[in-house]
Structure formats: structure tokens, C-alpha cells
Image (cartoon, rainbow, N blue to C red; front, side, top):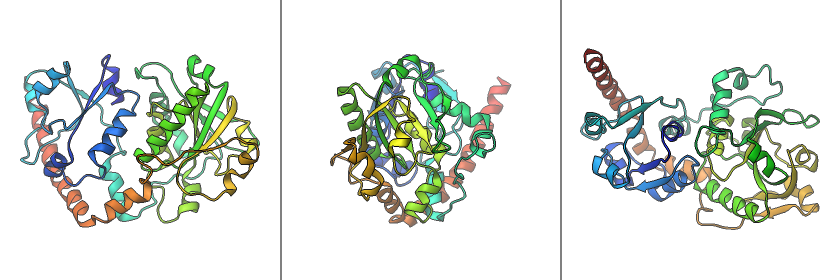
Length: 355
């Protein structure tokens, strides 16, 4: 979606119905309503198009004034094994962008089913010798996802909390416009695992309140070990890198802090790039202790119940595990489809070379 937005002035995002996905791919993890919520909250999306046909229809593109359809550098087939984009390819209306690796529904479902923790990162204690920050492509991703609504200019700030006694390390400088907002800050923290509509709606409500009070929204992101110590099993399902990117793409966020402490103490809050006006917490039950000090200072604000407050990470995981057989069948089918789609891609590349 970021790459697609960078190619034009507007981005319309087609979202398939639950029935179409079940027919062509397998059972959905999130409902159409939930997926529309996610797309609408993406800062690079101009408008969502619910119930978009699984096989892209040029007539639907024309209806929304879209000249091109953008897709990753793989081939997607329907239930009959036919290329979903063949018609628009033939019309010269197909644009390819690089597929984002690792952050795929198939991968996440696999982690839930296997109960694996191999994807977790160790806490960051040294910026110069940590696997997450040693890779330039990871740092580039932070910068790309922190861009503004055009996907081309600086936007949000990305900070790293390494030591409680040291200042925050700046991984991505915010734009001057964003920096001006930081004079007053609305802070909210959490794991934001499987970034879902519950998180999105909570952030929207924080942003709504922050705008009224002329505040920027800074999100504290707990590291993998902190979440695992609190929740156990193989949580978080998404590691800190993946969760950070999900939060950064959300239009309700002005900056993030990686490695935020479980308890937002006044000492930690004083390190943020502005004066904290309020500390928010969603409807998820939590012991009072983590917020005791900010409550004493009158900074604590609770986000009340909302339309998606029944959804949390465990809810999504239980949804998957409750349909384990169906999802395992989806994974097997995905393997078969992947082989078939890879064959089609090789054939297409061969045709393009010969032409």
C-alpha cells in the first residue's frame, strides 16, 4: 500500500468479501468489517472499496477513476488456478511493486498453530550490536513507514528507549511539522500484537481527544520479552519490528517509542520530546500498578468501551485455533497454490523476455 501510494496522488484499496476469500483462498482471520477498519486507518489509503471482486474487474477500476491496479511481484490465482490480474495485464493497467517479506497472514497463522517463539527479538541494550538495528533494510523500513500520507516526505518520529537513565535515541527524525506538535503529547502504550481493529479504534479515540487538546499522539511499544513475561505462551505473535511497522502506518499516530517500559513512570515520560498532557489506556483489563504514578499526577485517562473493544489478540488467536482444521487445510492449499503460482510467474517472465 505504501509503494502503491507513492505512485499516484490517490490510492483506492479494494477489499474482498469474506465469501470470496473463502471460495478462492480459505477462511478469513478477520471479517470484512474489521478489515475495512484497518484499511481506512492506513494513512496511505484514500478510500477503501469493500466487496471488491477477487478477480480484478476493469469496470470497477473505471467506476473509481483508477488508471492502474498495483500488486506485489507474485501471481495470485483464483479457485480455478487462473491469474486474477490477467485481464488488466492484457490492458496494460497492471503495475508491479516489490512484495513485503515476512509480514503475511500465512506466516502469522503458522506461528499461532506452531506456538513458536523463534520470531522474537531480544531486548535492545546496545544500538550498535543488536540484530534488529544492524540490518540497514530494517532501519530503511522504519523511515519508509514513518513517512507522511504521500509516502514520500518525512512524517512521524521513531525513538528507542534503551536505558531508563539515558535520553531516547532517535532512529527516525520527525518532520518539522510533526515536531511542532510534540509541544504537548498524548501518550499511549501497549503490545499492539496482531494490530487489529480493537487497537485501531482505541488509537482513533486517543487521536480524537488529542486533537481537541492540541496534542500529538506518541505510542510506546513494549519489547517482545516484556510482553512474553506478562502474557506467556508464545506471545507476542508479531515481533517488535513487525508491530512497530503496523503502528507507524496508522494515521492516528505521530510517533513511536520502541522498548517502552511496562510502567510509564514520570521519569520515562520526561524523556519524551514534549510535555505529556495525558497517558491513555484502553478497555483491556490491567492491574493499577503500572499506571499508579501517572494516576497520582492526574495524567491517566481511560479509553472507554467502543465498537471493537471485544477484540483483543487472544480473541483473534482463539478464532484461528477454534478453526484449526480449516486453517491447516488453508495452509496446505496455500502450498499447492504457491507452486502453481510460481510456475505461472516463470511462464509470464519467459513471455515478457521473448516479447
